[in-house]
Length: 121
Image (cartoon, rainbow, N blue to C red; front, side):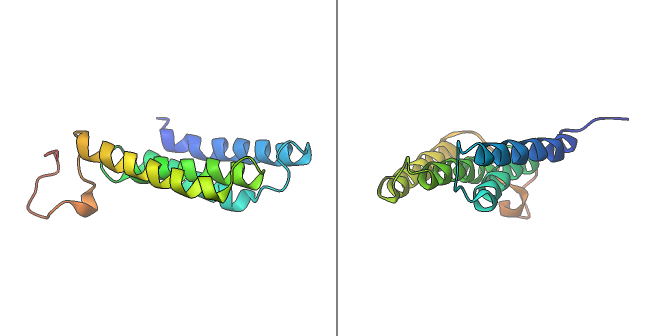
């Protein structure tokens, strides 16, 4: 039986949920909305894992992961909204610039129908 990377997602998510729950119960990270923060992080990880490396996933995946981390920092009082939002704008701009400069392919849903799949943008 061949093992795939996708098979790792569920165990890693369960471990992550358990760690978050433990940190909350130990009052290390009390008051964090783990559904929102975990949802952002999960969407970022799934974008990178399932979408592969392309001009879309290189922007969206890391941006959602950074948003998840910043959400934890804001909810624990370590980062104010006044700093979070401008930093997120800067991160988004840097990721867009990286996607423009790196020789990454367009995702299938953005590729024109007449363009072959193996051609990189």
